[in-house]
Length: 224
Length: 207
Image (cartoon, rainbow over all chains, first blue to last red; front, side):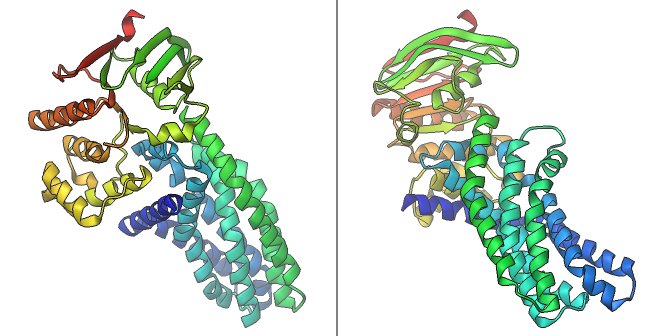
């Protein structure tokens, strides 16, 4: 019971922070829209070509945007001394860290999911493909947040942490990118999408179980 | 109740202290004394279990703390060097978050009243970044008001930045905690007079 209260408190605080300092959230969100938009402009007015590369562009932009959001994930709390208070809570640290990652996803990942269908329209996707795009991102962005949190935790306190985290984590993002864009591409050409989405679900479960463990272990070492 | 057995601490390249053994009973006040850089904060972090000692053990109620960390943490209130406040949130939001982490339940109205009684009522609704350093320290120390069922208080430089009035309030809080058989471990460079049945000191530069 008290654990749920703590989880609730952590998520609530991250929301409060996001509302009071929207710049962090807006940076990620605008980066996502701009980088996809720039590709569309750069490619030129060929509807077929735009449709063909749209999925890859949107997915790659989501990946990069989620990397951009990693910088403050733990470093802010470490600087203020909140992280050590979190480590001292007499409850499993993995659960508290999972709460933190969920909070992070809600303010950075969820907006990307919600805006993605509009970008899809921009690239000329069919209604069905728009739905698949949004649902693949709904499954994929939490994985990005979970894996990203591992990178952020491993590089906590290191100089140039974000760049290093990106180098560590981007290779791990590749399966998510592959299955996410395969699903949407399948929807665009009208073939079966459920197998790709199932694989994304599997990856999500895998990351949900393992990432918080890695995060708490590396934070304990970082604060030792 | 709390025992340090043969504790040694290595930080960076050098040995900070070793063979540190002390036994601290209920109702004791322990001051960790020493110049900058002798390892006061490191010792406090070892005591609360954030760092592990290079050798030796910290024992709470006849059991090494590493054996049942979760139980030990229910017994502990640690206020570290940093205030653990988020600059964008209001005093109320900050304290209610920290209390939730400490599993202390206080209802919202009570908390607002306590913030006013604690002398921070005027700052209601203002973000913490607009507070002075002393006010932030005071806000952070407010957690002690609800710390009566946590027997072990560990305070790293609690008096820093506080005005004389706030210091006397804090001293009274510490004294009442000692009177109910709690243990207070603290560091300070200021000379603050705290009345305690058992007064102990660890001089780290003489170990």
